[in-house]
Length: 160
Image 1 (cartoon, one colour):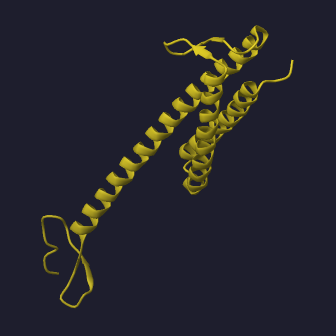
Image 2: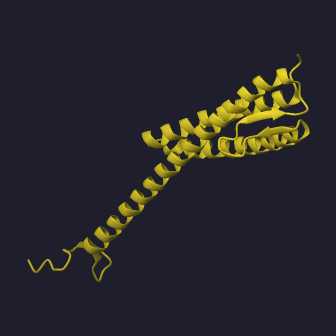
Image 3: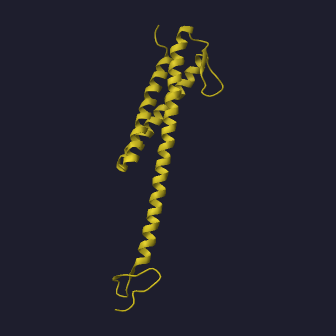
């Protein structure tokens, strides 16, 4: 049996999605190890892969319609049948579809975790900036000649 265009598209979409999962894992590793310079490259790669995945998903949906693919209405939307494909084509397509669903769940979970890591780091940086600004404004001032002088919050250094 020759592979159907639907099977080819599912295989391509799965391969691209697994690459996306790998990229999300690399991004997470960079976030955890604080190698933030790598994040710009990961963001660009994620955008490119997301565009490819969108294109593949559109093609898959088109081929689902052409082949009369029916999915269960409830998540995880299991493969039920393909009215216009021979019955022997159903098992491998159903298996690919299941793998695609699992990879999509993994990508979603990783993306959510990475988003939380980014948000946590953002909050920590904001708190640190606030602390530094408050500390600097309360301990550093300038005299009439523009020279920095230290002062204590809430008090003066007095005269020596």
